Image (cartoon, rainbow, N blue to C red; front, side):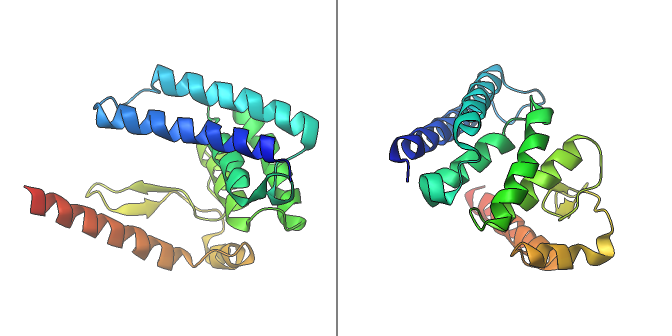
Length: 181
């Protein structure tokens, strides 16, 4: 395992999450626009991840360990300014899943994010929006009749179970708001 590379990836995503939390706490997030500080960090991290991939290939578990492999996945998930890079990484993750070097859910989430950001229906049903009442609802799904089969192949629960989990989280969030009001 490349510990230096693992530490670098974990540090990158730790700083990413710290900035997001700081901006959320200050009331600057959520926002209708891509916050300039967040955009700059995401672009910097994506640039560095491209260098890492160029030198080592996708940083999967065998190269950097589980935590850093998840960090690499989150960095590419946040690379929304570079959809071409995100799309290229889908192929890298497909290969990594085939080699059992990352968890299948990482591929599912990235694949769906790339598709929904480009206006196409998602394939695995991982991307959700909220309806007019604030309840989670999946973005459109291609061939929705077989989505649970595709999800199962990558180790995900059914779309119905996932939607219920998200609805339960929303119920708890609403209950907490009522308690503090």
